[in-house]
Image 1 (cartoon, rainbow, N blue to C red):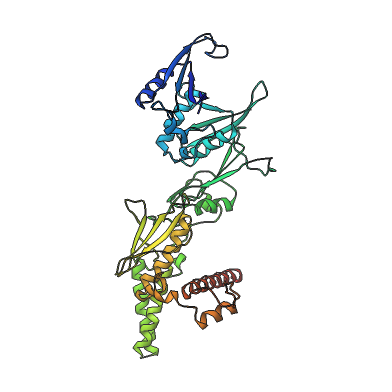
Image 2 (image 1 turned 90 degrees about the vertical axis):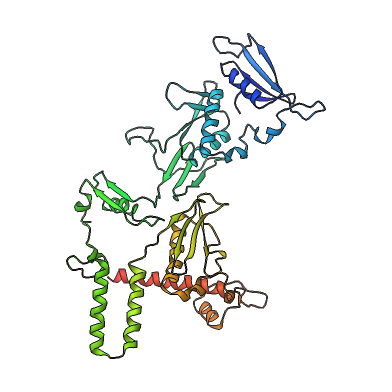
Length: 463
């Protein structure tokens, strides 16, 4: 990768520094057959002190003479960085990087050091591997006195590299025209944070839904900025039930964002020393008394009370106790029958999640999301289905992806809805809908959800 190359079918490693002792020990531990030659007074090698050059020659090991050579490591030996190296975990990568610095790197004292890359593809690969493993990295293009382009890569075992706005090296966000043969990569981590790198500059667009405490430590005249900061902490996340906002700069009061009471937030009257559940029970009793004065029909009162309870559960008490198991899945149990819903990391999409479920009584696994989703999206989708199971035990027929009714053709009512609202669906040669009843039901549900959002938006504008 650094001080090595291929010569006459052998892998040749050249080193004049003290690292030649480490190279020899490593080859011996691996049990590789090799021969070592020491050369002196070699022009261009050995540095200013003209140190002796140690050459290690390792055979391929595929000839008639049985020798333990480099052939079994061939998939890893690539000057352009083998794809197999991307499978290293963080600890392995840090060891790999430390050894790379010994070859083509420089390190002074306790500083992180830097690696010189004559190939831009290698610099791209190293910075990409570092970022997705949670390491801080920089990449700078340098022109040598001879006019050759090289790239200097720095990697630190830190979460981020910080700089002040007055520092000319600080990141600046600006629009630029694309360059010829330019490659821009973008990754998304487990928190749905988007990280991009272009021309050695790394830009991070934060999105951390697990944040549960916001500290407003910088005064600002921008009301939108204050609201945005608070919004970072009020996003949903598994295992998160609240968010604490500490304002030590009076931003909230200065911008008239004084917190409202719980009673104001939910539009209900809370009396002294009365909890939310006490208030709900009191309102139910008062409502029953008012209805009893107007109607003696107990069935009517029961139906209306049931509808009110359902609305309250959906809008106020939407909390699920997500727990992480030993496999790294987020799991929640719903209802008396203990239906299990899980958020599972997607194998084909790093830092993305899929929703699966095991419903009573069979508890057979079924996938609820056909494609991978960011963690917060997957959680919102899973909880919307979980609410149906919790509030109505019979709703299992609606959410069960293995239910037999889903395989039937769409009903006349479904087709009428799809055609009326211009919902596009695949058709066969005769123009018949190719969706199953389950697929049509999901499409109708999405359309109804769109209608609800439009109504809510209109109501806000009118208000």
